[in-house]
Image 1 (cartoon, one colour):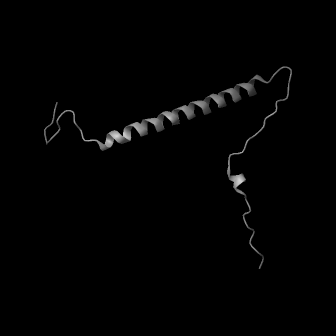
Image 2: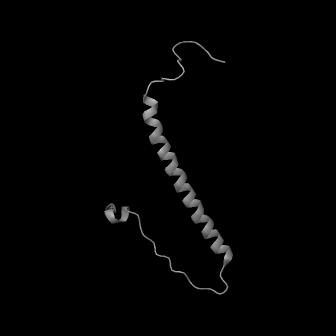
Image 3: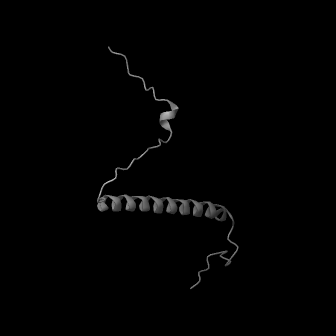
Length: 81
């Protein structure tokens, strides 16, 4: 039987990779491609901001969830209408 191939990936490969993009000047520019790239960047930025707000909201809500309810009584089977 043959030997198994080992996974020789270094820790460097597990990190984020940095990509370099070099533009090619075209006359006239491809506005459709530029528009798609701009929309993609805007969407990624909006998702990043929404994730930050979501994470910030969870950090604020968690300590409050552990505190007892001090407003409105709520001590028994009473129901308010």
